[in-house]
Length: 500
Image 1 (cartoon, rainbow, N blue to C red):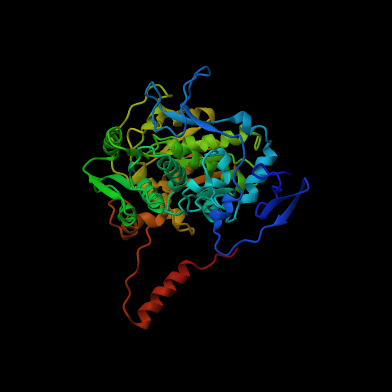
Image 2: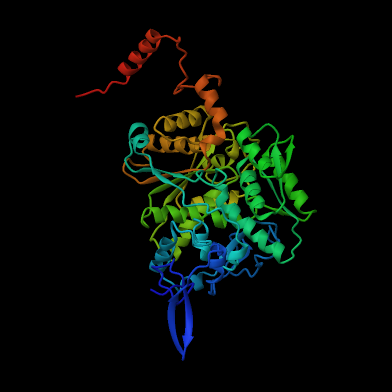
């Protein structure tokens, strides 16, 4: 099969380094001897993309006859009516290549160091930002995260044999936000080279967004500004933007207050808005859905469960799955579940009302701090995704999410509280019979557990009132052989195999 990006190179040998030489009107292929001083970007320059793919901003869920659109090189966050924007791809151009072609192309790039395709996001470049030059891309080769078969957890706690956890938190800055931030910062890098008035990039954050933004901006040498709610994120999350050189403003308000301020500031100053109000990030985040299909050899799971706060991610997953269906890679999309913390559950309440009326809430403190959001920007996106995927919304109390996290950790994982929210949703849907024991289910883990060691420590130490049903505190033992032996004998007897 001929490659889209270089007609003289087979799609099945993507790393072959070739050049075309003309002799008496004959074309022949010879191998390039790579110079010692070349790097992967130098190599990419010799194989520039040549295609007719394009993308643009359009109003989210616009009427079919709408003509409103904007170039991705414009600095715009809202439609003329004040609504959300979406990135729309030229699907007719993409459909000139069949599903088998796209699957082969994407599969051929996995595990390579070819710039920029070694990234799980940029390996789908034609579906993300097709017109950006590879030189402008800012990437840490994010994505390609582990799809973990949760064998023991599935059997022991939910009676399932086909349960998987997509560990998006095993990433450059420790959360799924890297997937979107590589796209946004790459486009900002392009805008600055085009002399657009972008002096820096700013965001409001509950922790993970600021970590991703500051890391990618630091890599590109772009100033970053972070608005954080004071005393509402973990130390591990706070130190990341500080270490990466961001200007960190700790503000005495919650996330929704920070979001209001950053929107006001970016309308007055040449600071590019990096929150999920900006639809560019969703283009990167949707690749996690494509990646799940790829990791299952393009078989569609029955269910995908995603924690939800500002609600961009549930729409991003839907968009990735739908794009694969529309372009012939798969024949259906999975049912989606959005899992919210009960202390910050406006989508859940909206769903339980039969989608009658949305009401923002004042989010209370939750251990799942990244989804402690009472007035989500992407509410309309989430509702569309759920309605079009026969989706469900569930919630988790603080005790439920912490217990679920502890149970998962006891089976060899080390998850974040937000994944505990998603696992609680799974437990409830299994107990009610909505999800069957043999249905293939993917739980999306959004951040690394190492970002939340304090909450884990407090849980296992018994420092959280009313919690700790599955706590495993350290045991204090005297420094003598007899005391140690007594403790070990009791432990081993309690763990002895039970033979039938």
